[in-house]
Length: 229
Image 1 (cartoon, rainbow, N blue to C red):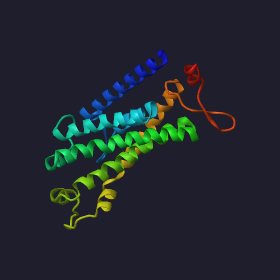
Image 2 (cartoon, helix red, strand yellow):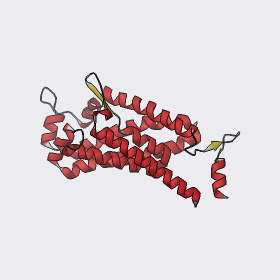
Image 3 (spheres, rainbow, N blue to C red):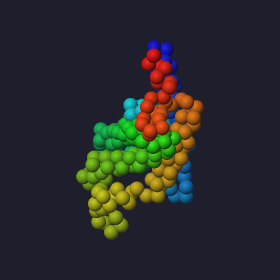
Image 4 (tube, rainbow, N blue to C red):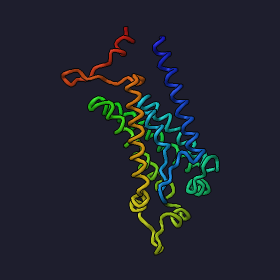
């Protein structure tokens, strides 16, 4: 019981810390790094760390926090989102879905990815892989939900899916052209930071990971065995 209480307390403290980071990233310019005309968004990094440290449920919970504050930016709370304000005027409900659901799904899936990959590859390497997929899936899910929910709206199409010649872009072309260099830079940033933090948490033994025996089979760590006795 004491072991479970410690784990629960540790999880709550980590979630509170990561939530605070999301708030700071969402409400101040710290969460957006300008590189020339491009901007790197760092809010996916707390989601990746939660997925690594707390698994799919923790990743999904932090994804929900990210999505919530992303939604608040659509109504002028925090750093305003130009596109979010535009879609909010079209449909608040669709905007809430588009801002939250992709992030929850992203956090859950990368939590699964970390657990699976850490049983096959080195757990520390899995942290870097998880960081990369957190940014990649967030971009794919976010853009797909955007097109799915607003791609048939005339105002949205005219503003975002019409080229200089007045021709409407297909959904695939719009998504591909929107995933520009800044999305790639976000993946690089998430990979490096989430990987480094995950590596540090494992080294400090704050994350329990599967241990492989000499035959390459996965077994539970000594810490897990003691907790069961």
